[in-house]
Amino acid sequence: MGYRVAVVGATGNVGREMLNILAERNFPADDVVALASARSVGQQASFGDKTTKVQDLAKFDFKGIDIVLSSPGAKVSAEHSPRAAKAGAIVIDNTSYWRMDPDVPLVVPEVNPKAIAGYKGRGIIANPNCSTIQMVVALKPIHDAAGIKRVVVSTYQSTSGAGKEGMDELLSQTKSFFVNQSLDPKKFTKSIAFNVIPHIDVFMDDGSTKEEWKMVVETKKILDPKIKVHATCVRVPTFVGHAEAINLELERPLDDVEARRILAAAPGILVVDRREPGGYVTPQEVTGQDGVFVSRIRSDPTIDNGLAMWVVSDNLRKGAALNAVQIAEELIKGYI
Image: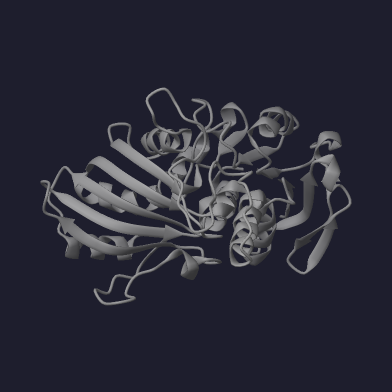
């Protein structure tokens, strides 16, 4: 049996990846509909070796659609995801709007696949934040083995996390530098070319940014509400791929040798950890890859039961589109 699938935000970075990954993984879809705003209507969207014309989201009738993969922005999702669910579709939503709704499951299939069953409340399943996804995939096997008390994480997030405008700004500022011109920042608060910016999303009352807050509350919802998380999220001048330096305080002893073995055996993780020059993974190498890559695994002697690691993943794939498609795959296996 094939399914009718709609992709909302089909012309954006994540929407295009959703279409690509549906085709790559041979998702059993008889029909795939590409939806976006009115200004994108009529554009061609690729689905494997097929193309389809983009339709107007605002005018689209979701009746007869089985699954919606949605990544249009939070405000648009707030309006149209419930409309799709009311028409009978199950919505897998990549925006921030639904993630902390108690009636909406927040799912990473390698971590909490059984949470998918909670979709019946609103007909919506939330896809976590990109930086949260790759972190909890790496944390899950460690938490199962030794219990995690506290996480301190610093992220190095590429410009694609800010959409096409972010990538375009990095490219234009980089070009202008070499011709001795200066371009004022538009998408970011400061120049992103040859720079790093410790500010993603809006500031909150306690001095954290909303991106940092997302990592805290999403980790608790997905993995364990008792885990303490402190995050510093930084935008860096790369195009694709997020990296994270993660420091853990564990409840029970776990040395780096055993941690490496546990991580290597865990689903969705690839360990590349040779203690030599180049024996680790960087964002450039993971672009277009599906896995969560873990390197630089080592004990932290400054704290009891301390462990450190370096985690890298393609933020457009596992950090967004791939995770959504994997949720859809789990959904059709045992829930619909």
